[in-house]
Every structure is written in structure tokens, then in C-alpha cells.
Length: 123
Image (cartoon, rainbow, N blue to C red; front, side):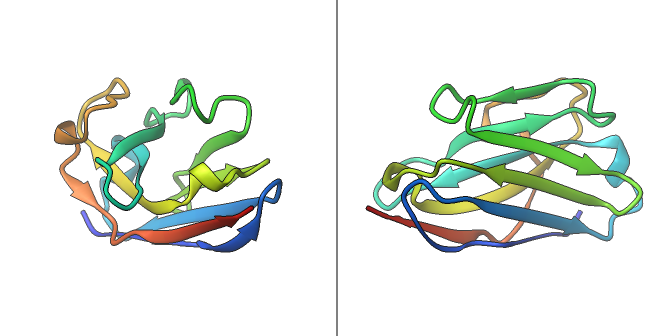
């Protein structure tokens, strides 16, 4: 599965960004999908996930109420709407695909990854 993330950039604290992830994989609609992020010197961490049919989503506590994950299977797209951004949200954001039905927050459960897009939030 080839994934391509985009939409990163530089934004002031309190601002918003929308990340996108596209795929050409025929089986895209069968995968659960997630966003992870990795800040300098830190481990890659789970941010948000969504099941194949969008009936369930999950978020890290640090982004609940600020971020919203969604997908469009017809367009083979995954999105992450990020609002009220904070400097601690600064990281490279990755989209990932998993063959598990349920959302997993362990990066080891994801078999395909996008190349990452950098989000920088200035204070």
C-alpha cells in the first residue's frame, strides 16, 4: 500500500491545518487508518485512527477535542483536521494503514506508511 501525506506547514499557536493522505491501493477501503506523529528526539506516537467504514474513531488524549480524523473511501483519502494547534503539536505527521479491523495505537500493527509531512506550530 502506497500512502502519500500532505498539508503540513507553519502555523501560529491557535491556528488550524488540514492534513491529507492519499493512496492508490485497490484495497484502501478495507484498511483501518491512522495518523501518527514524531517530534524531534521522541518516539513516534499515535494521534488518531479510524475504522474502514468510519463507524469508529480514536484519539490520543493530547488531541481530543481539537483534532478530527475522517476518510473518503471513494476518493481513497484520509484527513486530519487540526484545530487550536499548540507548539507541542510540532512534529512530522505520518499516515498509516492497518489490516486490523479495530483501531490499533501500536505502530507495529501498521504495515504501510506515508512519507510524513512536517507541522510546525509557533508560539
